[in-house]
Length: 180
Ligand SMILES: CC(C)(COP(=O)(O)OP(=O)(O)OC[C@H]1O[C@@H](n2cnc3c(N)ncnc32)[C@H](O)[C@@H]1OP(=O)(O)O)[C@@H](O)C(=O)NCCC(=O)NCCS
Image (tube, rainbow, N blue to C red):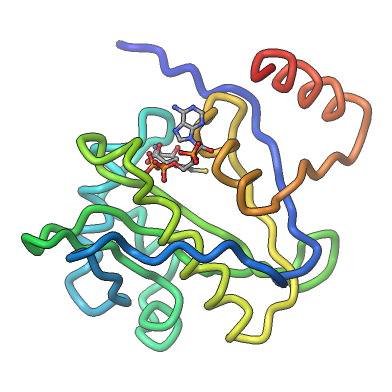
């Protein structure tokens, strides 16, 4: 069996949701929010894009439940000019990030054939703005040292390392050494 390099789990945070970089979708592309049946698109995108997590049929429900109210305002999809659902991210939250309620950027992915074209940026703009609209005033995320592109993107959006102890400081130092 192929061994996945999962890297080390890391967190990033943004202590406010002011001044979110504004990237609209490219011409012809559009964003739309979750509707019933999108579970399948979500799974397909992550199956294709995610080389680290174990993606399985029940994962969407496990992560988000099946409440249409929350999903339809929190989970967004990027749709190509041809109507292909190409990327997704979710404006989720936690009631217990250091014991407090924080917005959470959750499960971002772009299909591999469309990566590196700037398409994750409009998803990040949309989801940060949505968190703010929903009353969140700060946000965090978890990712991995193996997800170099994602960490670069989150930095671009003003997320900074969330470091709880010396071990995590060393992990970030090593990552930044690699990233230059
Ligand atoms: C992370 C991911 C969503 C980025 O999507 P993308 O559409 O390729 O990203 P973009 O083209 O919009 O790039 C946005 C920024 O990300 C960073 N980035 C993208 N690819 C990068 C790479 N190969 N190396 C370093 N930084 C990179 C850059 O900061 C880039 O901004 P720039 O183009 O102005 O330099 C995509 O790589 C993906 O789906 N990866 C697999 C799933 C995953 O890791 N999701 C994150 C879970 S935490």
